[in-house]
Amino acid sequence: MRPEGRLAGRRILITGAASGIGRATAELFAGEGAALALLDRNPDGLSDFDAIPCPADITDVVAVDHAVAAAASGMGGLDGLVNCAGKDMLGRLTDVSPEDWANIININLIGSANVCRAAVGAMPTGGTIVNVASGAGLFPLPDRTAYCAAKAGLVMFSKSLAMEVADDGIRVNAICPGAIDTPMLAGSYKDASDPVAEKAMIQDRYLLRRFGVPGEVAAAILFLSSDDASYVTGTAMAVDGGRTFY
Image: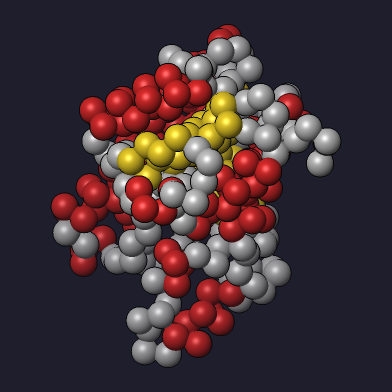
C-alpha cells in the first residue's frame, strides 16, 4: 500500500455494504483512504463505519435518487461507485413464480442500474464504477435461471455503460465472483439433505477446490477502482478460483 492509500481523496459509494463482499470492500476502502457513503437496506449494519449511511432499497428509484444525492452532498461529490447489493435464488424456471423471478431481476440488474443512473451525473472525469456480477453471469449454474440471467445482464449492462460514459472519463467494469464464503452462499447448501456433501460438490466446481473469501473479491474491486487500473474499462473480471477459465 502506498503511504497515503490507493484511494486517498476519493469519495466512493458502496451498495450492499452491511455484509459480505460489500462490507469487506468498505473495510478495505476505508483503510486505503477513501471517504465513504454506504447504502444498504439494513442501516444497523452500517453503524461500525465512519461513513455517510444511506439506507435504501436499490429497487426503489426514488429512494435511490435520494440516497445518492445525500452521498454526493455529504462528501462534496462522488468519485466512485461499487454495486455489491444482490440476492441469490435457487429454482428451476418451472418452479419459480413470476413474482420471484421479477424480484431477482429487479435486485441484481435493475437495482444496480438504478444506482448507476443516479451516480453518473455526480461523477467528474476519472470516476469509476464497479458492478459486482457473478461467475454465473459468464458460465451458468444449474437451477438458477433467474440469477444467471440477471447477472449475465449486469455484465452486458456494465460493458454497454462503459461505452456510454467513456467520453466523460468514467471507467465501468464488472467483477464476477465465484463461490464466496458469505451468508448468501451458505443459504445454497445449509438446507440440503446432506449439507456437507452439498458444500463439497460446490467446491469441486472450482480448480482451487475451495470457497473464496470476501476480502479476495474486495482486493479485485480495489484494483478496478484505483489508478492502477487506469487503462481498464468495459471488462468482466472473474474472481472465481478457476470455474470460468475456459
